Amino acid sequence: MCFKTKQSIHVDRSLYIYNDAATGAAVTPAGQIKLNMAICHASWVLTVVVVVVVVAGAAPHHLLVRGASDDDGGPSSPSALAGCDLFRGRWVADKSYPLYDASTCPFVPDVFDCRRNGRPDDAYLKFRWSPANCRLPRFDGADFLRRWRGKTVMFVGDSLSMNQWVSLACMLHAAAAAPVRATFTSGEPVSSVRFEDYDLSLVLYHTTFLVDVVQEDIGRVLKLDSMQNASEWLAAHLLVFNTWHWWTYRGASQVWDYVQDGNSTYRDMDRLTAFSKALSTWARWVDADVDASKTRVFYQGISPSHYDMSKQQQESQAAGMAPGLVGGGGSCLKQTRPLQEATDAAGGGGTTTSLLAPVQAVVRGVIDAMTAPVSLLDITAMSQLRIDAHPSVYGGPGRDGMDCTHWCIAGLPDAWNHIMYAMLLQQT
Image (cartoon, rainbow, N blue to C red; front, top):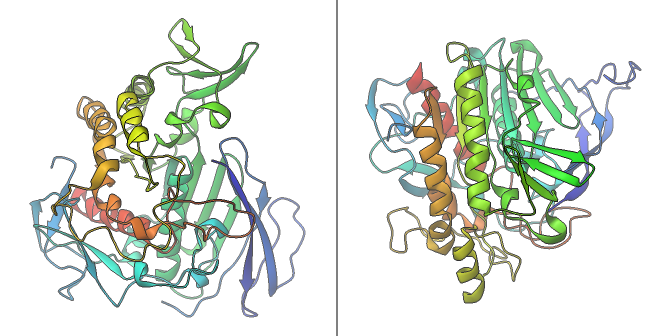
């Protein structure tokens, strides 16, 4: 899947834009900025925009804080600590949500901005995640900005990493003290949002597989034991990794021609086996090269899709250990409510979750075998409930077809970041 979109950021007259990072030329204040964004396996349209924004103010891996929370009105700092599975729980309707207005966030690409693209309903914005046996501390963006002052938070992965990166940028933009000064740079493979007054950078490093795809004489080779660019990630103080979405693509959508494992090269390989080998390469790199005293590491779990599947497609995918990323009628179309409220409700998350179980098992197995501390954002079950939270046909200008893979902003990825914030508090 590759889609391109042109985004317009409407700038208030009190907002000023200073020298363009690419040309050094002064940019006039006020008006409208055109931002070209592309979410693609190979290349994004390169645009560099620097802005100063003025706003009106604003399990072993499943640890959580007992204490003050969204629903008890208390502060975000935990008053007590306890182990809890953050990812088993329910979606609770909450009229105070969302945490920010996407129309005031200058970092949202068209493809995620469902309301601006004409989505008529807004109930999908008004759900708060509530774990079953503990309380999430309220997300405190100002606290996040203070705690991570002078540091770099980097998301490494595909467009689902971009989903989470944009979400966190908007959550912090809404919480930062006015006037907010933020520098936004869009490029390939690196994009970033820098909150100038906090010396905090949120970076997106786009990589489809974590391991390398190299152009050679025989064609594009997916190298399961090679991560040549990984050294570029070492400067971050918080790393959030993700891969899986592209591992199942075949035919014209497949972005490699051969797969190499050690000294052997193949036309193809069982995709779950290839994924496991690549993730093991990543794990060995983290264990050997990441300084755990300086850098915290998260793995964004498997984000589910919601496409209609025939019985034949389901059986075929089950045999190939592939997830629910299937073209079809697009079962997320016109969905305005979660599939069910709780992860423990009858049905267990549906067909897609059961198909993803082998992939989840690989992720857990690789992380559990690591010597470095890595926290798993085990988002699959809680996200599987949110069939209502995809862009569907509201992906914006130039976006054809149905998108039941990515997520609207504001929306579900805000909950992923909320949980990550709670886990970071637990680790403090």
